[in-house]
Image 1 (cartoon, rainbow, N blue to C red):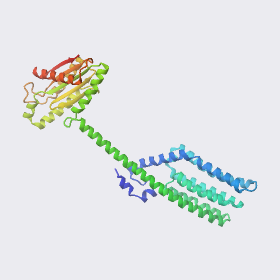
Image 2: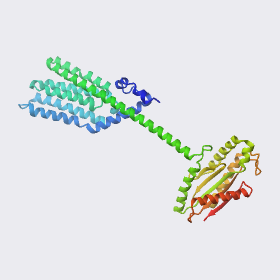
Image 3: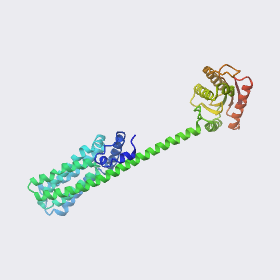
Image 4: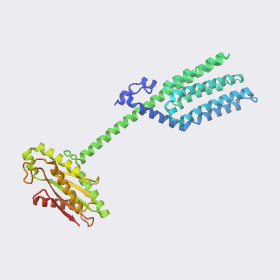
Length: 400
């Protein structure tokens, strides 16, 4: 994945061609530009029409001393069409995602059409000595198109090249003085517009890069926090929830059982003669044995709500919400059978030739005022009873 500093160092290349960015970022950068374009168009799309109509009206009221004839009305119509064209282009872009994506392809042509319409209006108004109004209107149109339509720097350069031909047409129409004045103001407006586009695009790119940098930092922070949460609540050897996680889950399930008056079962599981296993097979094999047993016990639980955790050493705890005494007995037998099916050799056991477990448990009936610690204590006593009875068996009690 490219670094933010690497993309930032591309400088002029990115400004001249905004899509010349690392392929991994192009789709994200495109979405960012389209989102900004849509937001701007939603807010400002009627403004060009209103500005052009207002400017045309002020021109008529302040500079026209006589009733305008058909030719004058025609040129006034051209001036008004400039605003209509801009507003229509913005309205279409507001409704079409494709136009938003391909803005740098079609917006320079709209810009060129605006300049040519303004040039024709300036040529027509020059007969009444009012061409300076349309020249000013053209400069404002150029600046507004460059900035409000969010042209890229490359698109703005293309617009300048397409619109420059309007001055040549005015020259060929026999008005070289007007052509020079029109071209001079047009190029000056384009120069200022290109500067604005350059600064805006550079700022936009910086904001995008800062947003990406912030997103990367937040992603790394979330990953670190998730990892810390795992380390704090997960047993490093078996991958099961640890004692801290069990305590939190136990408190939550106990409160729910008391509130709903529902049953809650807790099973304590102990690997039989595990100290002898370590002495005979070594601690590395002992760790591997615990991992295998933990996976088997977890696989024996059939409900998502059932929780298994490593309690410490070779002991595990299983928490069974909404489970009565018969259900707890069935689960305990299934846990023992799953460990037996592993067939892990145990040379130091006097119970069986393979690794076995003993299970003790307690079932809370949902009534009474005891604390959760009482359930754990009674399950531990039941486990001691199972081990005293020869191991590899189940002993359950009930907390009424």
